[in-house]
Image 1 (cartoon, helix red, strand yellow):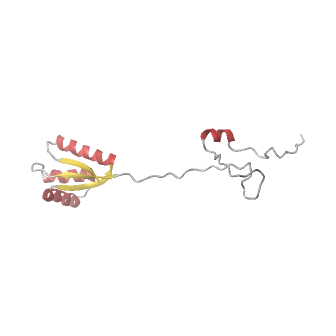
Image 2 (cartoon, rainbow, N blue to C red):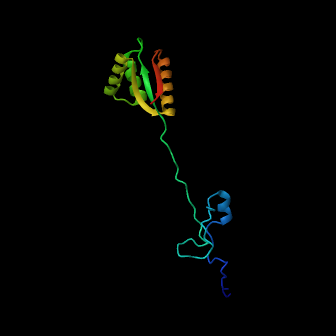
Image 3 (tube, rainbow, N blue to C red):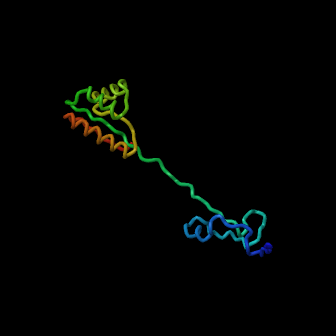
Length: 142
């Protein structure tokens, strides 16, 4: 079978993606750059399709402080245990935070995203109630 010569309207390659499917998914740029056809050497001939991906603009999530509030009934050792268990503090750090809560009335356990902070507050409150202690744990936007 003899190969027939290509006309100027027929491409000599098969496109990777059909143009119609790119246009229907919004992936092809239909911006008119004023090019009236022909190859002027810049690579923007009529058979070239430019696909652009917008750079995502992400912003950092809001952070929340998780705080323990002092009370006259919760044992200090229980507060240290809570700090070790739920906030991954070592014994020394947990004792330092517990003493800060004891002397100043409030102490910061950590800074987290909203969902993590909310979960930690709930876990601490449930754990304190389960052990019949009135320990209060709250969160505030940083």
